[in-house]
Length: 155
Picture 1 (cartoon, helix red, strand yellow):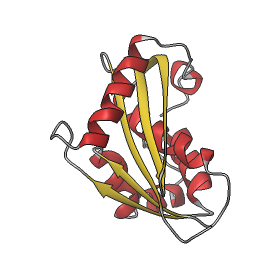
Picture 2 (tube, helix red, strand yellow):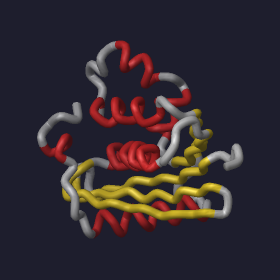
Picture 3 (cartoon, one colour):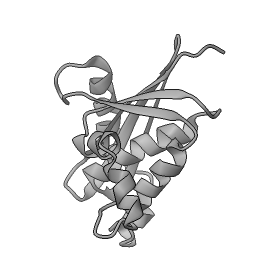
Picture 4 (cartoon, helix red, strand yellow):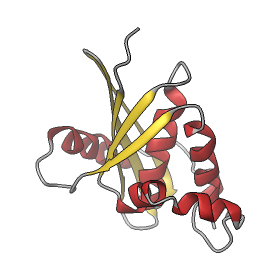
């Protein structure tokens, strides 16, 4: 294995906020590309943006990888790149939305070198557009339950 980075593109969508939602992921490693999506019956757009990142990181099969995540979510990119999430953790996520997913993110990212690149959504970036298509299609067929959201555990 070489030192190539894993490139992950993510997007989240919801029809209504809250409403049915989904996420799309395109993962690249060298010449290999895989796509994933998942739809939920009731959630929010920000949860889908963050859950896409969390689930993508959980799919990585080994530790110590360099991971570059492209997202059109300022919420997710800024929280990590500006270290807000670390300050939130120190305060027990008091008053913050989605503490369940932020905790999962911190755990999933802990064994990797993760960086985020924010890209403008709906601006013609091919892989961001593909993730959007996957997310919207998944939201139209919501087969899963975002139980933390539906049970009021998401802040």
